[in-house]
Image 1 (cartoon, one colour):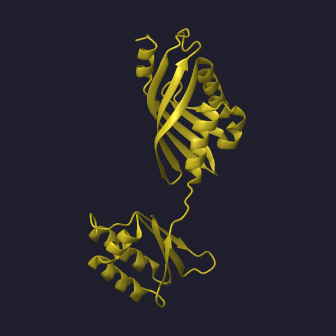
Image 2 (cartoon, one colour):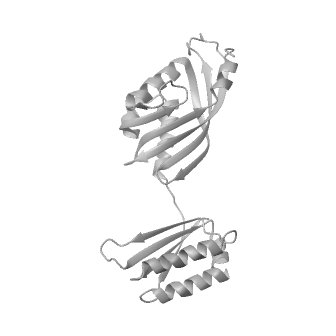
Image 3 (cartoon, rainbow, N blue to C red):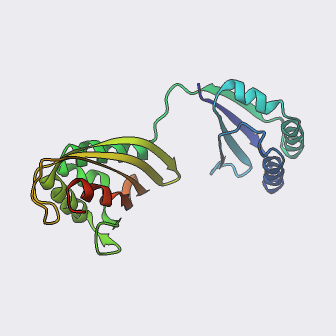
Length: 230
């Protein structure tokens, strides 16, 4: 079970605390078990900070705390703080990546399910599209998504299998497998009835909870071979 530790402390010497943390990161390469850290500063109390540290499990967190470098870092941090930091230990019982969920909604409900009315709920009005299948390096607007999905859905009955998804900051990367039956004209190729598959990767950049920019990379050569065009 994923484990999170919240460290609450006050200091007027945050730059020095930061330097201690940077030194610990350098000294514990290949040994630490920390998965993710976030440091926040209180907007109403300028010397109040909260550190959120994520571990794969409680056991990994304890292994991390037993490192001699961790003990040294903690002692140096305490010396820079106003009083003793407080610790809250949390087992993660629910976790939601909202941008990841929105990306999944696009692939399953909008693209695969054909609910084009939901496009404005998912994409920004000034969405920027980068697609190796299109001649333009970049096209702008939600109508690009509607146009492309209409073209693909007229040519194929298809679904997406999402093989892997990685979220970092405002970016969601999805590795997918597309499967479709060729039922209509596609790039001048009449319907063949063939059941086709191809793999691809899509990167969505989010802004204000909507998809602002997208990059599409797919194995079109494999698809064309299955349609007998190559």
